[in-house]
Image (tube, rainbow over all chains, first blue to last red; front, side, top):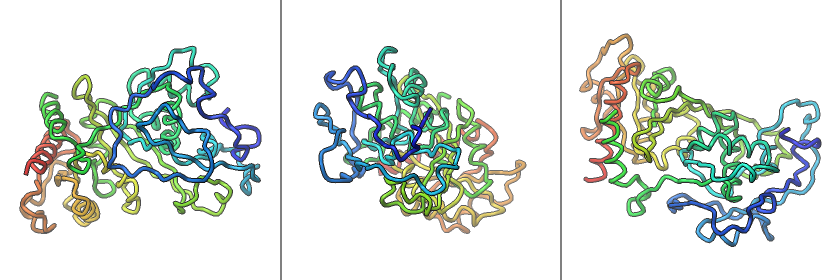
Length: 190
Length: 174
């Protein structure tokens, strides 16, 4: 059950803090480094966004388009496949720009999972052991862009912690020398 | 990143050293990059799926190395751009019988500034050309390592990765 009866166009899904039972908890995120070398997405549209999270000042929320109800795409009624971005309510950009290798770790208790979308629950179940965004995409057979959005949703709801790879700010975001040394030492021990 | 032409052994290389069987992630995109929040016009767009294989190596309790094989088709540069951010470096796998297949990858990494090494994948254990000949043919400067490897063998793949990280470290310290 990945799409409402009306297909991807009936986009009044409730994403955001009202959905989770733990909204209001103080900064549930774990963003050790916001990669400043990545270009943040510019706000997409005017007007207030329901996704604004005042308790998360260190990360830049992206304001997606507010979609108005619109007719289904031509031929959509006879298409048995769920379009990939139906799961995201039509959004194609995550609220945070997650690296493909960013690590995801579930912090939610089982009772917090109730009422979440099935895709969100599957991600939380998968990420009880730490996984990258790429693995979430591959293991759950979700396209990469969709996985990024869903993981960002969960991070915003405080249900997963994200560990973005940290770059060296003084070197244009390249991996830090100490990281390279650790990788080298780790490879030699393999 | 593990790059190179089609069929040069990228996924084989990743699989040889990865602790998991290589996984495949797919990215779906449309030909138009602007305004794709809106699915109204999906019917007018060409949808393309890019597949990318990757593996992982746990190096320490809190250190995981991911190996991403770049999408074989050179036109998916946006995926490369995505991968190159945060990457340590790239292994450009080369089949010396089809040397030209590696040109786009070499050009890309030279332009992006990501440290890379060239690894000549010996098919059937044969290395018809030695690294010096390839260096001259590719017009690669002396700073970029060119080594021979066998993408099927873990020890070779591991040694290639070590050469790459050493090269990346040298480039940073230079």
